Image (cartoon, rainbow, N blue to C red; front, top):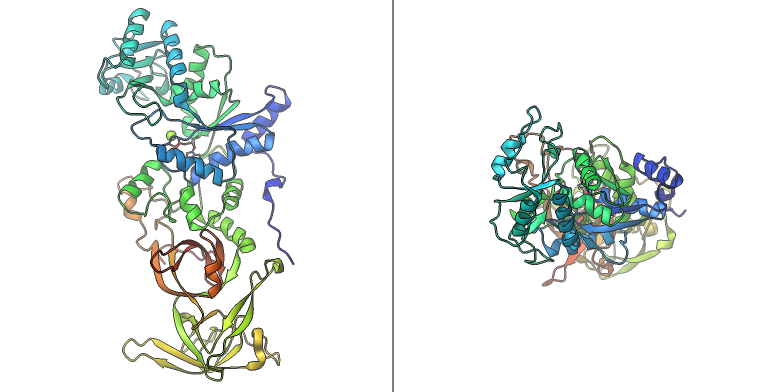
Length: 564
Ligand code: ATP
Ligand code: MG
């Protein structure tokens, strides 16, 4: 039997509310084609939450024959960096999406955005304000108290134009002047109380260098960038719902020829992790993790190093769907996606994590016999590989007990077990290190008639264990990764820093593992199942020793319990 990968992409699922709106707009002829965009700010690496937005925006384009732009929202030069731009492009591509000829940048529109601001001033809809940031906050009022007009609100158009030009020319200090939209200081929506749309910033921009001394704010930039790109549906997360009136106000006031529709959906929250880039950056900067692509991080690059496949992440995003209310998805949902992907696609190999020697007394010394290992139990097309069988082998320390309970079907005094693809072996004796009390060596006899692990007389041998030849093998290192936090919601308690909840055992390095010789043929990034241990992928090869280093992607079964 060949296991086919479940093709969930073509599964008939009812459309989510966003896809329904788009389908309706295409059916009624409101739009001939959908144009969406993914607008990351290049101030960090992308995480699994971004994957949800990427799969939605690019997914819509694929499904409806539209296009999706990759647009960098690069309006905050003090936090942005070209390295983030590169990592974001790599991650979107790796997830399997294309953004057409070239990526776009909000900074490409700086001149146009400036001209729109001048137009707002001329329409009497924007003014230069000299209140300090603190005063602006104070004047804004609160949810229950109305705001107060700035004393600079009624300047003449001519004065505003002069001052805005001076701001642009670098004649003022940072924070001394801002350009504000003139809307309504009594609006119940705080975002509409004369929001700042331009500020002075003397920072080197990664693309425009020092050409600009003023930078447009997000809310002002975003709607106009969408408009300039003729975006039909501007999909963003729920926290922007209260910003939508401002989005619409800017476009309405400027009477732009095109007016994209902003639609909000629930952001992804995942248990046992934090999602905000600001928090991820803190973990990177303070060395709580080994960089943005640490395999424990829920960044796209971290998941890639961990051994996640693009398909598993896309399937995950499809499974969780698109809704309108915030919720927390269980980490197990993500883990199940990679598990079911690798169960079908990863080849099997053998590796012993915590080796103890087993000597087969009646097996000829110096004999190396090749037995056949199946690369996949259900998929014969994946072929077989030769496994060297020798008199001395390694088995897992916990596959032997000198006083086993009844339900323990592995090796122990009086027991017989099957060495997978090898032979049946019968316990003979074992040696214990008198100082440590640890089992040092186990002796067995084998049944020469049982090659391949088949009992010649059909006798019942319940236990099957994995093994690796003690003579022909490859030493490997395994990074055992576990969840980064040991509580479901590290941010739940506002009085406790989320870093207090880091799981101290999230990375355990096992340096004495022994794998079958064939692992040298695996390439970096390749996924594999080590029989009975879990799913792994090659992270790297140690430069001094040539020793392959594996990352554990996920366990074979969902057996996770907090603080185990
Ligand atoms: P963070 O809060 O992690 O810093 P952000 O929203 O500031 O993220 P952006 O670079 O502005 O990061 O995000 C780009 C796009 O990805 C936005 O449209 C945003 O709504 C979306 N996005 C960010 N986080 C999530 C999430 N957890 N779930 C769904 N979409 C998200
Ligand atoms: Mg943002």
